[in-house]
Amino acid sequence: MERGDSELGDRREEKDPLPDLDRSVELLRRHRLGDPRALNELFGRYAPSLLRVIRTRMGSLAQFCDPEDVMQETFLVAFDRMRELEVRTRYGILAYLSRIAENQIRRLRRYHDAKRRDPRREQVAAEWTTSPARDSTPSRIVSRAEEEERVGRLVGELSPDDFRTVLLLRDYEGASWEEIQGELGRPSIRAVRELYRRAVQKLARRLAPRRTPSGPDPG
Image 1 (tube, helix red, strand yellow):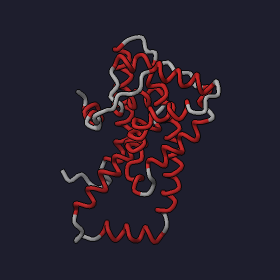
Image 2: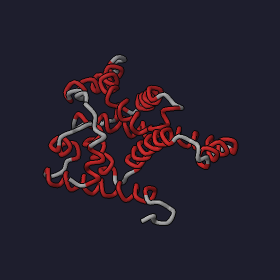
Image 3: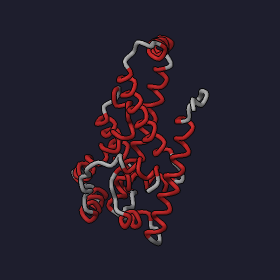
């Protein structure tokens, strides 16, 4: 297994099974016919999986914004758009809601990035990074949270869309190769694996510059 495969695979958690497609399609049909309760039931079926995706994508941003609030905003945005949604597999609705959530998270991140540029906050950060007396444990914790946030953000920004989708399905939702093949309409499992390999390589290239030390090589 490639190193990138291993790193992303380590991020997988125990997954709740996604709802069956037939019931989801039926709820969409009822929503189009004007049933006021159908969409609430549909959103409730996907809420656990969507919240897990949002928490992963937010990383340390979750210190300032409640992931459940982001999920509710996602549902509000999706409310008027679901009538036109065409669903082929049970992962289609989750992938669609995840794209809306990504836009909400980007908006929140821009806002909090702007707040972090406040000179008073930068001074506090400078004191922490230059003081030799600081315990390294908090910095390691922050580093891990920031890395999780950065990986989630870069996954959300990958293009083409199939790169983002294959990583979302395989590494965040634990979908099988067969399920991903059906979702993406690929001709074979081999084609899906090749797509995943290329997506991991692209993500690794985007991660690499920040992981390379800027100072002299100690070795």
